Image 1 (spheres, rainbow, N blue to C red):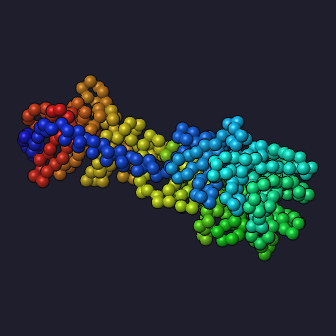
Image 2: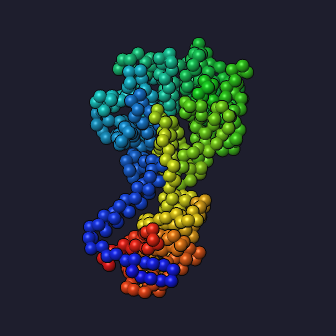
Image 3: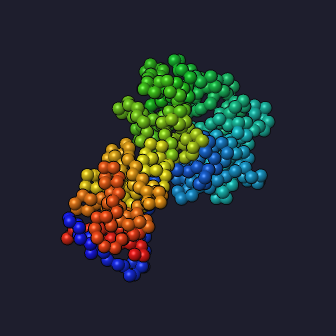
Length: 473
């Protein structure tokens, strides 16, 4: 026991090393659990952890709940626990091309996969791919680049191609899949997107980036469209149009053209829009991240999805999707896939992987507390302690060096009932830290008695005694 003028310090030697190791493990697990929870606020997949490629093209969720991720190099199926990757491997029933473009599901559950040299269908039972026969206007077998696929409520399936016109087939539930070129209308043959018209026929975006409607064998072009990029139905049942330069428009059936839904993103490069089915529309941009349009309030806001590795609002977002479980999926060009869970964590990541919250250096966390002034202190390996601002906008770094000039590792940090801040350095004696400037005062200069080194934990009892746990002392 050491006695100073205003502090009683009690030492207790722990002879059972197993108990000390157990306590250390428990403390480390607590830190690891907190760090893990913060890191999992957004799940990510890149080519480093299973994704075939980070050049993301689009998403599709099938009727079984699988999430399909289409990339520039390979097809990915996420089943809820792992990613299965499909490539062109030369096998009879493998993919015949690795450049994925689009995907659609038929009424019998089979999937049509569009890529840069045609269409294949996927058999769940055998986990195999089979070619869909594509025929030109002269009934010659062709292998065109597929831009997009669409399934309309009248049972038709359409494929927009590059240079081979509009292909179609009737989805009758049978597996003799053949798509033919039958369209004689030039505007449709150059279309890049088709969306079912819930009344009759379908909407389309032509190769000239104009918007039209096909119904009863005729085409009506909508005037006033400025470089159409993407079409989708909103949850309110109205047709929305995203224009290349940032305008979001909605079709006014009374007037027969698209009117402004929002001009808040004008000047930004819009890439794709997609309804979340819950009253909002995702707006993917090229270089300005992901936005969300609220159909009720008619306001556009930044997406709530945050990524630790980089700033989302500076990225090219290729697609965004709200799945059936309420998770938000975001595909970022040359970055990867990011999924924000439906049951969002209240934790926010802080550390080296964060583009905006790297307030505690690059080393692992060894200890942390919130003091009586609500100040967060974080100790890291060979990097002293960080005093983090309450609003998480910045931090002060108190490095702390030993007698040899080596940066110290604080294994514990503790505030006693008198407001004193104590740190336990590895292979050094217990020290009192000045919270204003980080100055350290060794315990041997405060109280008489043996020098206590390799402090792993400090606690205070009801009588004001400090209990110090050490490693091997």
